[in-house]
Amino acid sequence: MKVSVVGTGYVGLVTGACLAEMGNDVLCLDVDPNKIRILEEGGIPIHEPGLDQVVARNVKAGRLHFTTDIERAVAHGTIQFIAVGTPPDEDGSADLQYVLAAARNIGRLMTDYKVIVDKSTVPVGTADKVRAAVADEIAKRDTDAKFAVVSNPEFLKEGAAVDDFMRPDRIVVGADDEQAILLMRALYAPFQRNHERLVVMDVRSAELTKYAANAMLATRISFMNELALLAEKMGADIEQVRLGIGSDPRIGTHFLYAGCGYGGSCFPKDVKALIKTASDEGQELKVLKAVEAANDHQKHVLIEKVTRRFGENLAGKHFAVWGLAFKPNTDDMREATSRVVLAELFQRGATVTAYDPVAMPEAQRIFGEESRLTYAENPMGALDNADALLIVTEWKEFRSPDFDKIKATLKSPVVLDGRNLYEPGLVQQFGLDYEGIGRGLKG
Image 1: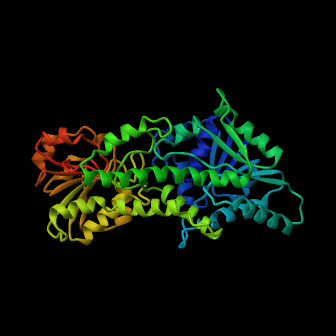
Image 2 (image 1 turned 60 degrees about the horizontal axis):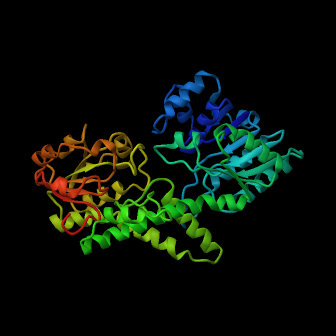
């Protein structure tokens, strides 16, 4: 099948590469010539494990192409995926300007039947706006070109996106056009050979499904984070609580890990957008407002632990930070807890040496020439002359460190673990003053 993908960001590039992997003829469009240049030179503008091999393999096979030519992209695909950004507006709503611009370009240039697929995360009612924008452009040209608009939300986890796309647990398609549904079934057939995973529903339900899924996962995280703070005060261990409730099949084990707050491009933005969508309909989503407030507070918990030990004024103090990305296996720092932690440390007069396996270039872009921030070449290199180690991202390479070396290198043997990577009793045996999130008053 001939497929065009508008946008070569995280969602668009994964979608295009994985569809090409299944034998489709895919053309990816981006208006940023620098992104297209990087891709045509064999590079990848985002960090996503395994994606570079899939892209390289399909470029070599002639199934995956890149362009900045909008007219070429519209002409190419019967199926037109819109996978552009929907950043939060000032009021928390999703900014649809890029989605609607892509839709207008398709309507302005299409000459035959197109299935226009909203792959971007968009609020309920976006398909209607896309349909109206396309129809308006077609009407200006006095043509009768036919089209259908489909909602096909993505459920990809950063750091595991390729595997999620190739082995989906569900494929949601919102559509009311039988030909479009038939084409979407054909497109996704190779991804569900063992059993049916494609769920067809009306467009608005599909749009709401994406927001509902992310909001539910964010709710589980904030719920556990609030319980973790209670566990600290009561001398309970949130890890034991997690095992106790996670064994209940009605609850399950996923997204029950306490930590120092969620971030990234999805959960914060989508929770805000769903709250705003409900507000526009005259409904207050009280639970989600609490989820958002709890997460905002959780991002400050590590700093609260720092100030309890070192005082409110941190002038002259130096800290090591392990982890800058919002989660492991990505260089994405959007809404990352590290940004809050670093900003507060700087505001209180402290200096920082940070290490992250892949996100340090992104941190340099964000923080620029910040004199209070330096970077280490490896985890242990960040500990020199540090008053404490703060763990912000749960990278695998942090899981089994040399605790003797950590104690010997730190100025004071304090480890504040925002991701509960270690068992408190084990770490304390090495003479380290260790504190996690919700691991009880004594650890």
